Length: 632
Image (cartoon, rainbow, N blue to C red; front, side, top):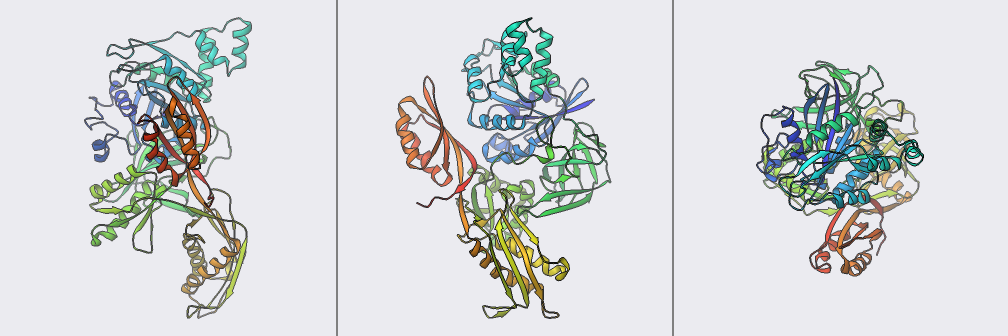
């Protein structure tokens, strides 16, 4: 028996949860088909998910085919919950990207495929809803080649597509598959051009090899609700997607990709193990890097272990388990050290993959509607931040809690979750764009036992501020001798540096900085940790003012589809808003315009689009990083 961890990914409403339900039903994991509309599916088990009919959290379920156990990871489709998708990508052996035969290639589909191709993750494309009115095949295949990936070929065909009587038939390997594979396989190209013609066995080997290395993407057709073509999909998953390789090491190494709170406050962590073995009662140490760049370790003993599809364990390499008993565990924690090798089938060790999507760009503040619930709200938000570290919950000077979010839908879901799961009614301030500052150069400052605002600080501090690498967050280091100060004084300086960097010279949070303690001293027995906490902000501010900072604003990548006669007015309006265009593609009925635009200008672009396109324009966008603010 071997295990495959397969992600089901899609644009919202393409049918991935229905496909997950069908796979579990067809292979005996569940005894009845649930429905998204009825709110009784296996993986969307949260009350909010069932009420809204969308997936919010990744969920895992398993079924068995012959000697292969397939762990299905159903991921959210709405772009506001892209962080859940990113965490799932770290633990997958392969993916099924679901498209609707009616809606075709949608915006989120393109984002997901770009990421899957970059990771070289084996991916099958499943075209769902072939039995719905408006479904199409030939034109959709061309859209897939043009907008997703050029290296595709169908492994099945549909008879009666777009009708309730649609039927799916596997295709015999032929010229179309050979020509598609020849584009990326020199040996096959030589056989196609010079002969002898490749045999079905040759094509089968090439198909398996190039699907496994993520360079080719087979396309299958079917209907999750009707069941057509689903068995062909399963057969292709088992045959074409190999298990992820392991190093053969005995030391446990894995990734926590989900955390769920229990009714008693305990946490259940979902761990994908890459190497080694984990058993109940075993003591584990997880590592993480906090938002400010500081490393941290969390240790605990496993009190209960439930292996997906396999009961009480042990958890072995390649499998997933739910673990309890690990207080303080959070999403993204790593078990063990990363492997020495930097190369695996997907291009990078799963535990070392860099973030694939931009961080959230919307900032809001949350307060309790009833003041007596303020403490409970703060505790609840910290719990939710463990499930989604990207929301970065932190207290503000006004007594509220600041959060980072991807969009308004995520805000609505958080409000509902607070009310339902924690009994707290919360008010969210209108979301605003989150700006960042980064040091421009190097600045240094120091003070020895000074007076500030009438207070004498019995401390000596010298700090140097300089830029850090992009994405490094905040780093604090020492040039002084570590024993020169008591440990409590060192900790007071470091903690205060990171806290003070939440507000830079322009009022935004400072990131990607490196602060070095270059001078220190104390006066025994007068000095206390409070002296160092009080003096650090003054010295740090002086050093930051000498280094100076640049202000950065978030950007969104956008796609807009507009009628043929609306190209000029739409592009003119977007250009006036400072948009930068990356492509304009014409079709028979519409233009597809792609580019990037400052997040603060995006709302205006969306609001004007209906008037410029007679209500026919379609807009989609996603965070794409940040750029230095151009003052206007």
